[in-house]
Length: 85
Image (cartoon, rainbow, N blue to C red; front, side, top):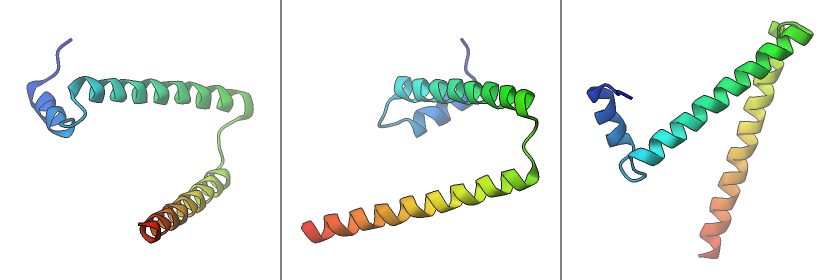
């Protein structure tokens, strides 16, 4: 396996505390997971047809709402942790 030196230097910098091996392992797992998800998406589109613009918009809106809820929960936990200290 050959990794371009410039890329390897950037990765070493980004991976500093975790270590190069952990960083590469995490990246490979993420790539494998994306590949599997793409396979699923392709299969679903073969079975049910492509996602419509309306469906895509609805999903993106739901994801934004979920992200907002997660942020609210994180803020509450931080506030609770600050009050407990």
